[in-house]
Length: 150
Ligand SMILES: [Ca+2]
Ligand SMILES: [Ca+2]
Ligand SMILES: [Ca+2]
Image (cartoon, rainbow, N blue to C red; front, side):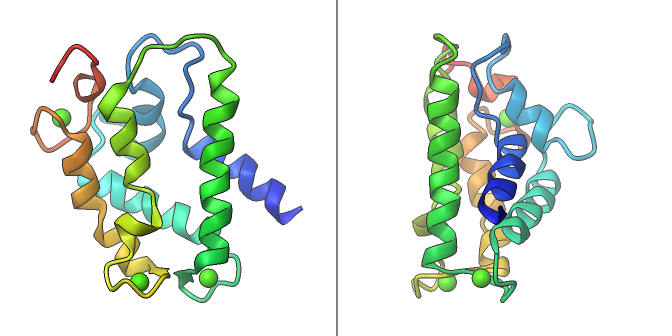
């Protein structure tokens, strides 16, 4: 029950879907653009990462441990597998890879103790933004997912 609830929730949060996606990164932008101004800013990322964190902190101790992170990882993999069946969507290339990397335990575990605290997770929002923000304008837009841009 808990697992299913989490899965359903994260599918709504991280729709790395190729379905009905004409603009690269459109779903990411729709779901992470918290103030709906068309640009995913650092504030948007930080706010949303806080929500994702709470969702996966099953024992509510303020840290994602290895067990909790395994579910988080599984959920992202399941989401990718789900969407892979939808035909060939646009190759989001490095944008999508960066998006996934920014969610990993290794990326977020600043002190290397094997668990990620809320401060660590939200504290890496800027690093994550920098990874995805290919045109370096400080916000994430469709331009940052365009496979033609390098
Ligand atoms: Ca926890
Ligand atoms: Ca840590
Ligand atoms: Ca940008």
